Image (tube, rainbow, N blue to C red; front, side):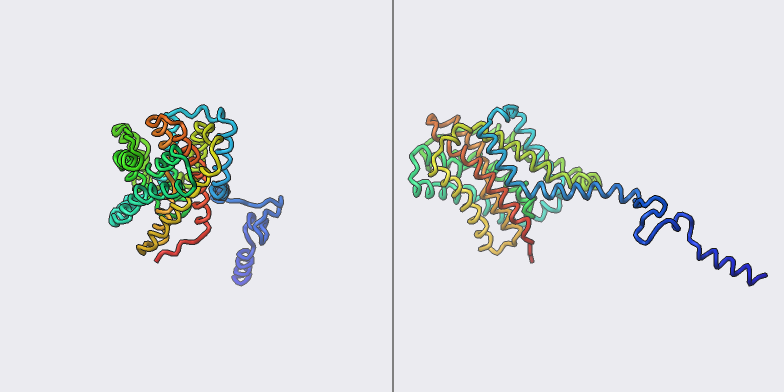
Amino acid sequence: TTTTTRATREGAAKIPPRSARFMDARGRDGRRGATVVTAASASVAPMEQFKKFSELFANLFPIWTILAAVVGVMRPATFEFMTSNMYTGCLALLMFSMGITLTIDDFKRVFAKPGVISLGFLACYVMMPALAFVIGNALGLSGPLLAGLILVGSINGGQASNLCAYIARGDVALSVLMTTATTVGCIFMTPLICKLALGAVVDVDAVGMAVSTVQVVLVPVVVGLFLNKNVPKVCRSIEPFSPVIGVTMTIILVGGAVANCAAGILGAGMALQAAAFALHFIGGVAGYWIMRAFKYNETTCRTVAIETAMKSSAFGFLLASLHFPEYLVRVPSAVSVVWMAVLGSTMAVVWRFIPVEDK
């Protein structure tokens, strides 16, 4: 009897539970032929699909930029909703989407190497104006167009460079600090360069520039840092959306800026197109190799290259409109908006597919 009972128990142990008996080796429900999906896998699948979409969306950044520029030129009314407050809001949201990817340690690490920011500042306000002067003269630009190109070379870095640094696997914290440094420096450097190079006195609203820097750069980044420190799980859930938010905001900003300058862009000649392209392209290449010469790592070189190549061309257009009576001075800034965005986004996506091998 004991032996029979033991055998019965062993036999029962070999019989799988009812739920397991209906599962085949591939994890399918034998009763209905339906795949059994756990609640955890069901919740993960949509996010994984979105991450793939986000990756593809970011990789097509140059295409979206070109399309936005074309629509802005051909159908300016499409972006007539872009008021000054909308510009500020889009830029702030762009910077916030970068801020949640950063930590305080990122900024501590950058502050430990002030030489990088100094070199980037010199590239922005010494190399780029000089490069604009040389390129403009080499291509035989007229006086007003040459003045406009030099003005483009003399303005601060654009906020979209932070997104491009993120996509290119660069140092976003360094990019944010360089953008802030050149934006603050614009208060005194741009008027000085214009006076020395163009013989013009350009008044820049120092208080307005300071307020804009705080609104557009500092506050969104600080809020992102605060959230990253105090509610990291929330930030990790938001982070996959950062590239989509950043690219979308940049597309709107490029389209809006180009729409405001559509007439100038359509009227520009090939020499000016070539000059604007060369300024941003050569500036980016030079920024990269200058940092290489100083033995900085690949991440830093990419970041400085993007920061050097990308200028706040829309701000240059505003300065030209306010302080130069000759309309042609505005046109280089209008053309620059297109080439700066296209080249910057292209650099970012190309580098995204090249692994970073920092030692």
